[in-house]
Amino acid sequence: MFSRADLGRCGTRARPGCGQTVRWTTTEAGKPLAVNISPDVDGNTAVWRDVHGTLRSRRVTKVRPLLPHEKLMMPHLATCKGTVRRRRADPPPRTPPPPPRPRPRAGELYERLGVDRTATQEEIKKAYRRLARQLHPDLHPGDTTAAERFKEVTEAYDVLSDPRRRQAYDLTGRRPRPG
Image 1: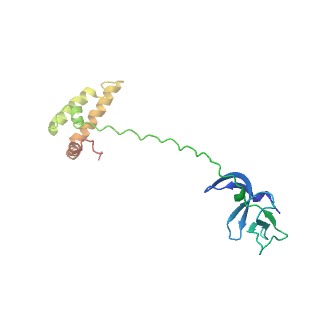
Image 2: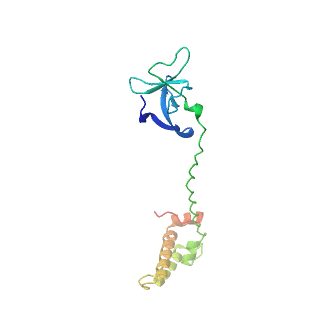
Image 3: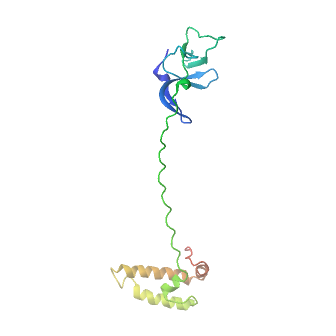
C-alpha cells in the first residue's frame, strides 16, 4: 500500500518543520497533509491509495468509521516537535561603491597651457604650439612623462580652441564631451 515515493520531510519552504520523515497525503479538500510513517492505533486519520495511485487521507468519525482498505495513521502535526531553526546563510558582503571621481579644478585646462582664463584664441594657439614643440614625443623618445604631458596639453587645446566647448568648460568646470 505504501511506497518510498510517498515519503518526504516535515516542513516546506514557506514553513520550516522538524525535518522528520513523513508520508504526504492529499485530504478530501485537496490540501497536503503529513502523517507519521507507520500506522497508529491512536490516530484519527484514515489513509488509503485511490485508483489513480494517489495517497489520500480523511478524518475518521463515528459517522464515517475506518474501512477495511484504509490504515489508521496519526497526523504528523500532532507529534511534531517543532520547527528546527535553520540558520540563514549570511548575505554576500556588499561591495563598496567606487570612490567618486575627483572633480577637476576650474581652470585646470588653462593652467596646462599656461594662459589666463581671459586669453584670446590667438594666445591659446601660440601657447599650444610652444608647448607642442617642447614636449612632442618625437623629440623625447622613451620619455613617458613628456608623452603624457603632451597628451594633456593637446586635450586642453582641443577643448579651449573650440568656442562652444570652451564656453561649456567655463560654465561647468568640467571637460565637455568630444563632438
